[in-house]
Amino acid sequence: MYAFGLCIDRHYLTPGLATITGLADSLAPGARKAAALRILTLDLGPNHALLLADLAKRAGFGSFALARRSPLRCARMADVSYITVTTYLRFEFTAAFVHRPYLIYVDADTLVRGDLTAPLDTLRPGEIGAVRDEFNPVIGQCPALPGAAQRWPRLKGRPYYNAGLLWAHTADLLRLRRGVEVALTRQRRHILHNDQDALNLWLLHTGLVRPVGAEYNRFEVGRFLERGNWVRRVVTRPLRPDPAAALIHFVGPEKPWQASCPRTDDVREYRVLLRRTLRHVRALGAAHSEPAGVR
Image (cartoon, one colour):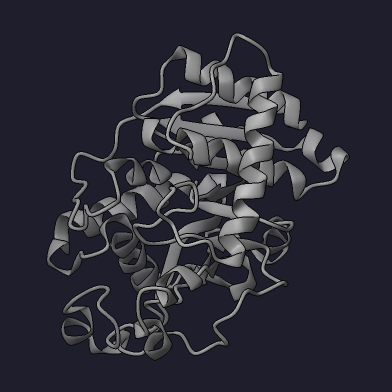
């Protein structure tokens, strides 16, 4: 009935593998067998594709497919400090490629801890499910979409959504892609956070968003508190690990697979999953070498 979609390039191969393991852990064996895994990439080679396919099979997914895609020609990288143009591939999933009624898109810099499928039950045709962004929660009161609230006063005070986890009917994917393309072409001056701002412009103007609970895309904030207190001025919830979170999102330049990342509780939990993932890779045999970049 549904497929999980990830966009993975060479920089994110290792975390992508961990995300696949986390997704498998989140499902009962029967549900895992019925679920599909779909990967889009710019630059992964045949050996990488084989590794991903073998891990998906070992994890118990019943269907796997990988395809190369190019981002929209109008893609704009306004923020390039730690994000690559691969981020735009989230809009390149098609109904034919997904081959399931629903797509659950998941960023690769995440720790999946629970079942992500429940929001599909509330999703109406035409809607995109999304979670409000914890660092940019309100239009006109955050850096996202600069100037949009002044140009369209009716948007001021509206929620701004994070693109790291999305739910969609596959029949609506083409419409979503076209809407993002229009935003990137006609409203470029309001783009700061790359494809995420373009997505929000489309959601704001169409109203085709189904708000999903914060526990499905909870930001890991402990890394930021290690460096300063600005998070306390932005995030209103208690700044401690959330045991009820179905997904922890490691937004920002410091990632939990990097040696320099502060060892918060969530980071330590992630690295346990990562070590188990790499054991899976080694168990697959000599055909696969361990991905580089993890220390």
